[in-house]
Image 1: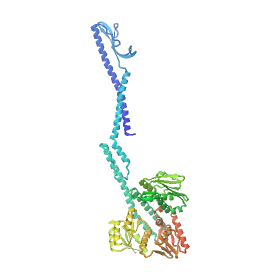
Image 2: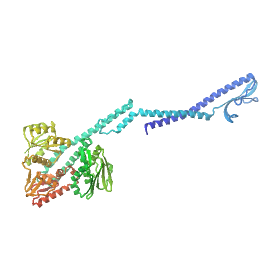
Image 3: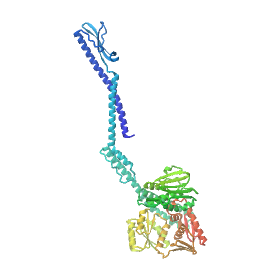
Image 4: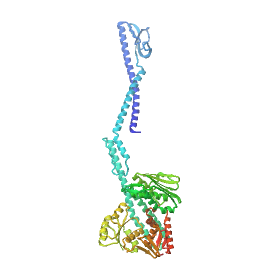
Length: 415
Length: 225
């Protein structure tokens, strides 16, 4: 729900309730006020009538407003206020009257004197109050709605600008700054806080990347020492089989770390956009060249290779990154294949599809491009190949997708 | 042949020396930028191994000095940074080759020997081992003067063996030397076995002896026994 909607709804609910209560109160106040006024007037009338009878001795008759009758003596001398319906000749219907009546002794005779006046009819009163309150209510709502809309457009504009800018925020955008400014304290505070936060995120990310890069560098030299010491150890004559096995095992794991740090370094560098040089690349030729690189592996696994490469497809991008990507994709298709399976490589305009046979993934395909994601936990590879590919695609704004179809793992790239 | 190793990691210098000295190289070392300046100003070297990250200065600056004082020396750059920039800049400034840390000693040896051959310090483009001869200009291998019909990869493997004769060479090192970094995609090294099998067969067909010995699980050794 939008803020404007929410405030409008709240305004509507609250003012609706207030107006209903106000209407009811209003009704009671007005009707009791009118009744009091009426009573006062009727008393006044009675006083005047009494005075006039005393003075003139005649009985005025303004039926139905004044009703005077001589009554037998010893009638109950009660003072009464009642509401009564009296038939009106003109309106041809009964109309509600308020009547104040008493028995009064004037000049030794007893009179029944009643003063009446029409009561405001409840229906009419209700109607008037309802019309007045609801029109005020509607007027209020309409003006609130327009005021709110204007406010939300004007006052909240810096907020929406900030929001739009934040949507564009990415942790690797150095020099990110919020441009929107507002005179309002809340928004300037919000922007200040957000700016601090984004700067922190960016600097944390930068230092993390620098850390990965530095750590990888620092690891290379000790690894070089270990690796070369092990290679020296291998040269000793008359090594026993068990000794050779121990050395070999240490050696294989050393190589694995060294491969891992090299790959991590590459990944960091790609993420840092440290390959900005662009050149014209003939992707068709590059693909052919890289496929040749793998021919021994393809032969070893008795794989069938199907190539459908449209010649002369040109890309304008960084050569090193494109090469890494192609090697990773073809390498994966070869490595995660079954003996006697197939590798299909299709290049058409803006479209590259590399597919290979293999069992379906045992786990979610959406994680396939994540770092250190492995389908086979015991695998030697650290699972960075596809993370590198994704990073390269992200930098080049290429779209990459994975699907499993017809027993084939397909990676589809749209340039 | 005199080699200067400019590298701040003494342990690494030690193993490199130990590996190269039996090959007939005379190795000297410089552990810092200043020591390197000293040595370069005082002596002449045939080959210089230069680590780019040095205490006291940038290795790239030393290249200028090397080009002044040791113009004829073959220059091999070593870097812990697997950085394309460094590589391109180093090669632009006149380095002959580039190798990234960590490296296989056999690979380093092969690069140095190739440098030496290219500069004709040996005065020869021919390598030989008993009845086997390799012409590194024409990329041909002869056994008892019969030319061997080898594929490009088989040639590279046998050259790598002969350059690193009498040394244990690991399968990983061979794979990386011949196939490059993409060997990490191999589940196993069967593809190397088949190439080695072919080489052995071709040598045998030409009445050569089998010098390629299996070294337990480690790799191979090219030697008389």
